[in-house]
Length: 195
Image (cartoon, rainbow, N blue to C red):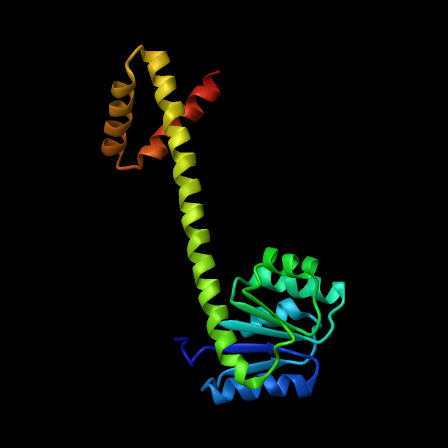
């Protein structure tokens, strides 16, 4: 269930098509709806509005317009649903790469707005969670590599076993009240400086 207090930005140059989206949102209980009827200075205006969700309605978008919309999706990091009348595989792939949560072809009817909005927010949240987990895994892997390098440096320079090198790093981190990876990075940096 999506919070009805969300600020929803509707980007649509056509007032008739925009009215369909806005009617669908109002009937679903959403009252914080802001409409942009032009794409001029779009990114600046989107940042100023700071919406929770963005609905973009494009009848037959040109490549330039699509690229501008994709830039908004990549930069703003909000759930984005894009409504178009026609599409092809390349456009769909480009929209997915740009982080568009829902790419709806020929689906602009007010009774469809709420389920599409719900799905857009759910897909964005699921993708965001996966992206955060991936970033955490990358960070952990990078930290492990630094710790392994530091252990190797200590083993070589002090002639100690791997377990002793790890214990030395850990004890130093505890004494210095720092993270293990910070101490390990200091060892690696010092080794690089000393050649």
